Image 1: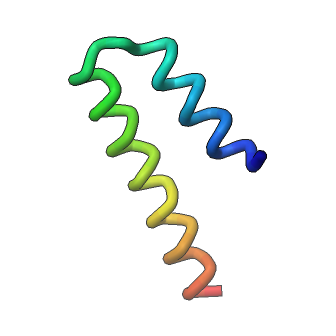
Image 2: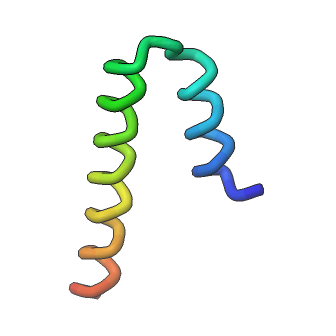
Length: 42
């Protein structure tokens, strides 16, 4: 399993509050987008 998926699962289990999970999910998506942009620019 990729580390990103395990991290996301851990985040989900550690934050049962839905609003915290949404915030973490947004931050995770921003992180993925930044990686994509870095790959495109490179």
